[in-house]
Length: 124
Image (cartoon, rainbow, N blue to C red; front, top):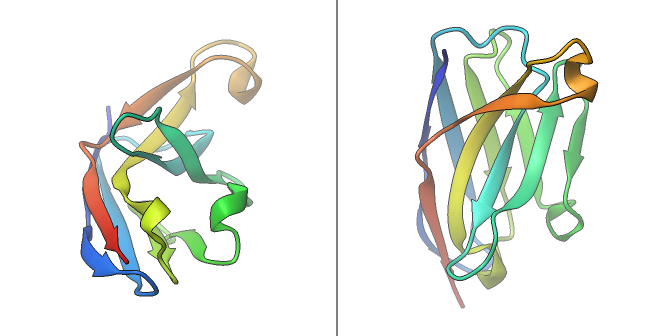
């Protein structure tokens, strides 16, 4: 089972940039996707960005054009480059990886591995 450890969070001002990293150890092969979620105080956890095993990426509308998700070639590290940060980006950011657990493959249920999260705070 893989373990994920996030790093790179911190406190910045609006308009600044941060780059988050997620280091994966153990078995990370045959995953449907890896991605980043975030959770602000008092709010539900929300998807920020995902990258599929074929390399395609998706982003929530509020971060399009500002955030970029990437992986190294060995799939051992996941990154999230965050530019032009806004106060609404303040949250704990979590790294996740999902693998299929039924014959339906990635079209069916998945099992997720989660990191412990890293805090991002953006001040005006």
